[in-house]
Picture (cartoon, helix red, strand yellow):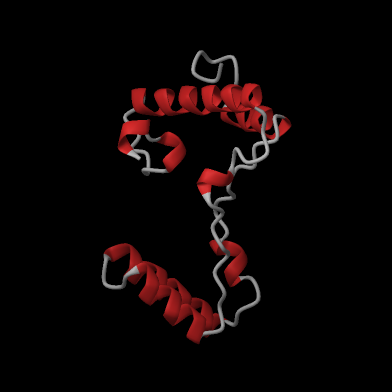
Length: 123
């Protein structure tokens, strides 16, 4: 439905939430910086930039942040988003996600290889 323009991304996420699908939250980095002093914020930003550029691995960045007293939010396991749903609801939710994926592909948006976006033979 989202693909056909009947639903916006937000409406699609609302529909998934109504079906009981828990979508992982994005953009928590800003929350991490909320209670830090300016010097520490700069160090944290530098660590994020080094990770992005490839100078640090994710694990190294996490270790550096821990030394600064910054705790990264735990990422939800993507394979758990359908946990506790009946088959009919899982099917509806997967259809919504598939449509979202197709729409993004049509716009040439590169998707990360999350398990729920991958074909069975790719898992």
